[in-house]
Image (cartoon, rainbow, N blue to C red):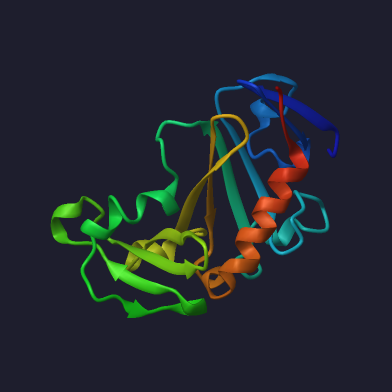
Amino acid sequence: DTTVRQIVMGNNLISVPANFIRFDQARRDGIASRLDLYLRYPEMDGYSAAARDDFNHTTTRKIIFLSFEPRMMSRDMSGRFAPIYSALVEKPGTPGPGGTTVYAFSEKSGYLSEVLAVAERPGKDPFVARCLSGPSAEESLAPCERDVQVGDDLSLTYRFPRELLANWPALDAAIAAKVASILKTGH
């Protein structure tokens, strides 16, 4: 069902086809406190009969999960690297995919079985994503996650397959472009 649904969150209007919305009960117009979407990457489209195998994970892992929620923290993941995450990771990190540096979290950090992937971006805060590691990462369809601030006081968390870290600039740009196309903010 590609009927466009209008979901209101605070001062934000998210206009999205029903086949992007992950849970059946959320496929309606109205006010929501959270909205969960899923898309194929790199197509950036929703569920369809033709894409069924991708969404049922019988083909390669290429589904991205997006969750819009009211913002709870003053900084997104990139903004939290210097003041928070950098104190919780073991240095030095190891070279990771796509020019990232992968850091193990210290034992006391509370992030057990997770690593932090960080990539410098000239003139901006770094790209930062947390990824599951070890056996839990193998079982997860989307073991990496990143949150960014969008719209008017919204936080977008997106989860993605670890393989996509190798081309994180394209992934991050595709997410930003899709969000810009579906999210309108009131004045």
